[in-house]
Length: 305
Ligand SMILES: Cc1cc2nc3c(=O)[nH]c(=O)nc-3n(C[C@H](O)[C@H](O)[C@H](O)COP(=O)(O)OP(=O)(O)OC[C@H]3O[C@@H](n4cnc5c(N)ncnc54)[C@H](O)[C@@H]3O)c2cc1C
Image 1 (cartoon, protein in one colour):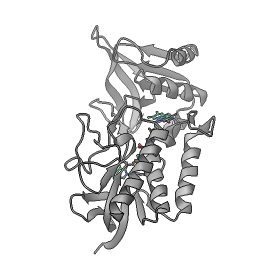
Image 2 (cartoon, helix red, strand yellow):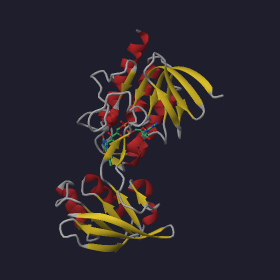
Image 3 (tube, helix red, strand yellow):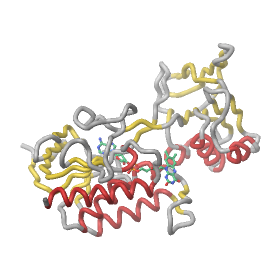
Image 4 (spheres, helix red, strand yellow):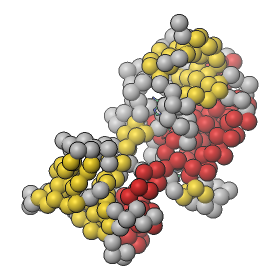
C-alpha cells in the first residue's frame, strides 16, 4: 500500500516557475509539495551564464537555481526529486497525484513542467547524442562534435564547447540560412574551428558497438551525402511542451501548450499552470517566476474560497 498524503497544493515541475510557486505557496501558509522528475532548476541548469536576471549582471544558471532552491528549502517545502509521477487525476475537488511511492491528495495543482528538447530524428540511436553542452560537453575535450541547429542555442553552445577545448565542430542547419544573432555567428565562425553548413540535415549516425564514429550528412538541395567523423552530437532544434501527464484534461493550444487565463487558471477548477508550459510569447526566467507567483496566489485564493 502506498503512503497517502493530504496537502493543499501539489506543484509539478521544479524549474523557476515551480520553485517560485513553492515559495509563494509556503509563505501563504499552504502545505505544498514540489515533485520534480529530475533535479530542481529546470532548463536554467543548462544555461551557462544568465545575463538578464535583474540583480545579477551575470550569474551561472546552476548557481542561480541553487540559490532559488535554498530559498525553497528555507521554507520547509517538501521537495521530491527524481520523482516518477505515475498518474494525475485533476478533475475532482480532490486532485490525486500518484508517484511510485506516495499518493498525494491535493486541493489544487500547479503545472510547471516546462519544455524538453526536440530529439534528433535519425534511424540509429546512440549514447553520444546530447542536448546540453554544459552538462555533457566535458568528455569531448580534444574531440570532434556535430552540432545540429542554426539558432542562438546552437551557436552559443558551440562557443561554449570550443571554450572548454573541443577541437572541431561541424554545425548543420536545415534551412538556407542561420538564425543566430549575427554577432554570435561572427564570433563562432571567426574561430576557424567550425565547419558550418546550411541546407544540410543529418541522414543517419554511424555507430560501431556502443561508440559513435561518424554522421552521414545530406544536402537537402542537391541530395548529396557525406560521412563526417564525429565523436559526439549536440542537438539544438528547439523545445516541445512537457504535457503528457495532463494533456487529456487541460485545454492546450495547437502547439500543445497550456491555455491559462491572467490568473494562471486552466479550464479545470483548481488547476493552475505557470512558466514555459503555458501558451505565451516570452519564455524567460523572469516571466516563469511571474507566472509561478500568480499561480500560487491564485491557488491560495481558490483553496481559501
Ligand atoms: C538554451 C537556453 C538558454 C536560455 N537562456 C536564458 C537566459 O539567459 N535568461 C532567461 O531569462 N531565460 C533563458 N532561457 C529560458 C528559461 O530557461 C526558461 O524560460 C525557464 O527555465 C522556464 O522555467 P519553467 O520553470 O517554466 O520550466 P523549466 O525550466 O523547463 O522547468 C520545468 C521542470 O519541470 C520538470 N518536469 C518536466 N516534466 C515533468 C513531470 N512529468 N513530472 C515532474 N517534473 C517534470 C523538468 O525536469 C524541469 O525541471 C533559456 C532557455 C534555453 C533553452
